[in-house]
Length: 145
Length: 145
DNA sequence: ATGTAATAGTTGGAATTGTAACTAACAAGC
DNA sequence: GCTTGTTAGTTACAATTCCAACTATTACAT
Image (cartoon, rainbow over all chains, first blue to last red):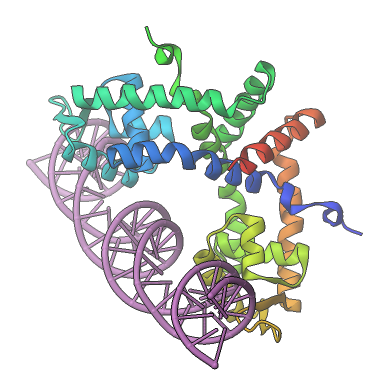
């Protein structure tokens, strides 16, 4: 008898994580998608700029774990929609600084407020400690190399 | 001052869930991908058949929340690789019963064993209670409509 | 029995993502 | 100055996924 005999794949953490992630993303996705025509990667880039202010694409990559091609395409679309502007760095002209326009800021504020509400709804059945513990464990799992 | 002013989007549950899901899926994905040339949807279909035995495509859909086109295509590829067989139901000829072949069973057993090990590694830093609580909360989040 | 609706599963084409190769700019060693 | 290597970001093309329409079969109501 091997040890996997009593293992239930339905309890496999990556599976549960994916299911929870998909289910919980669905409702919020409607907001940035239907209201602003954005994709998930664009929302991610947007909120990084909202939080940190001016950043480079690779800076976003370092913080978000997003692949650079995803970032590149998200930035393009956000620039087309005039939610951000790009400026070449004088000192190193490979680098581009990204900044939210005021339209971008407004979208960010709106989505952030919606996210806050939705987050409250999601953690509704949990105690404060449970919610905090959940976030900590998720952060640890996400940080895993 | 609105309530989202002190909300940190980096702590937004859907975001954390997605990050944790992506990170934790990556390593295991290598196994079913590199070793068996399978995609995530195929692994999902496979393990549902491994757990429940003979099933229909829509039965898998009901349990897994996968969209029917994903299931249809996953089933096709698994059938091509001879990991499962399809049989028309006599009573209702729209329906097809899916069953793992013995090759499919072997793959399932192997992946399940690997998953068991990997799951142990993932929960390494957690206490039993923490791990159990995590799974419970993820199940609740996944079940949310 | 016949028209209408529902269900199981498939398919086509557009949209998105993945992967690898690419350009452009800088850096370092010789 | 030149080669070689590295980094920032883009692009091309293949692989996947999404969405909507489709076929085939059964169910149900008149």
